[in-house]
Length: 65
Image (tube, rainbow, N blue to C red):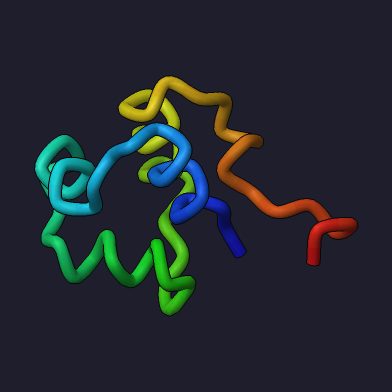
């Protein structure tokens, strides 16, 4: 599970913008945001770079679940 939704909100960034930055469809990014799909590690690292956060900040820890 991921925290992409929360990080987008914290950064004031829309899913459409993130999709454009990643070269992915809105539906793909929305799947990540809604936890219907999980990005590959490669995509997760790209998301972290685009959002200027550490990759670990996009992941839930066991304590948070």
